[in-house]
Image 1 (cartoon, helix red, strand yellow):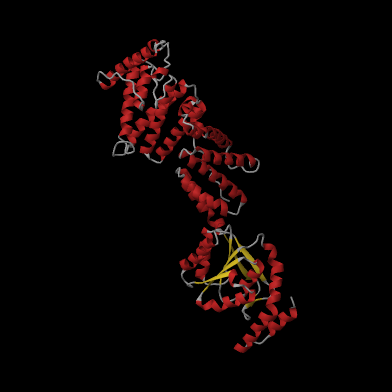
Image 2 (image 1 turned 135 degrees about the horizontal axis):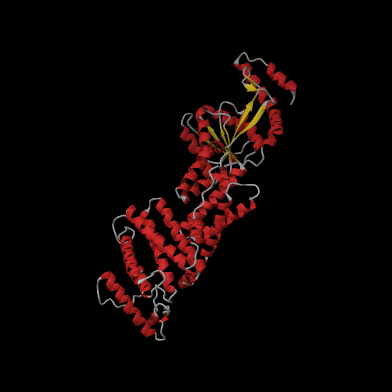
Length: 507
């Protein structure tokens, strides 16, 4: 920079308006070009990316805005100006030689924060929600600065301003060559912790959709790479659980697999999940992978295959159990009751299928009774077997319903029908005759509880006490089922428990 020109400008008289105008003209025509070149050479290294979009609040000086536009060369600029600063805006456009296609201008109130914020938001949406937007708030009113900060807390922006450690008050300008570009940390670096806490609170409440929505934005905006990685993993976990709860197994598996891959890749550098949680997530990924086959079975109308395949029916049962427990913690007892009811139904359907009977389409000619327990139903005569089953069924019904003449074989079989049939077949779920009748009466009572739910045939909600009785009964029966099927109930229970993101995600 030509120091003689600087000295001449600094020594010029400023006693009258004419003197000031002469000094300003000299500054504009002789100095500012060199100041701009010097600014670009000194500050250019501070920019690590191409600036596509710039919002600039226009104050009483054109220089800082013109310096940044010359340095950044944005594809599009939005000028926010007031009635008092319109002349300064014209000066910026003139100095930077901006064609009309390169900028928009919006006159805003100098005191209305929301008015200014709305203009920033409008341009953000009009520009297609860019990955990052730069905002220069060097000039403008305090309201403009507040609006910029507000936008920065919501939109991913880079705040910048031009400062100087050598401001010449008497000349009302920075000392030439002292201009510095300052990049302000994204406001989310300051306020992000609050948003993270909000997301994790929703996660703790099993509101995975709400948590995922917040985490999706945070993982994109937070600049710290280690925090961003953790938020990405928390987001994938929320997505997996949200889809799993909705029984949408393929996208649930996709998210869980991506999470597992991330944890495996970063295992040597990022330690934000315990080994126990990582192992549990691995088990859940494997469970979800098996569950993805269910959709194909349904499309191919092979529903019976689901009941016949351990790797399908048992993860599906575990899903019902876990989902019911989640609804319970949310105090959604009616929905939890339906899920427990479905688990109870699956237990019965699976056991009944072991005798060759499919509840949705009963073909009693395929009956395969246990010859040790019911030899009269295990003969070579299918007709005799069915007749004997009908007799046993009638005896059980008469004890439970206190009615006679109920000798019929249901098709299809309801939940209560299924367990009545299992009782007649002396299934392992029923240890003895006395136990069979008593247990079937309890199942009947539980069915009535579900039927009285507002989600079934009733008009009122399920109460906490009624729900507790029902859930305890189903879980105890499921334990018996697991024992009979040689499943490790405790391990299954542990594997399906939800994992929560560690809370130490901040700095």
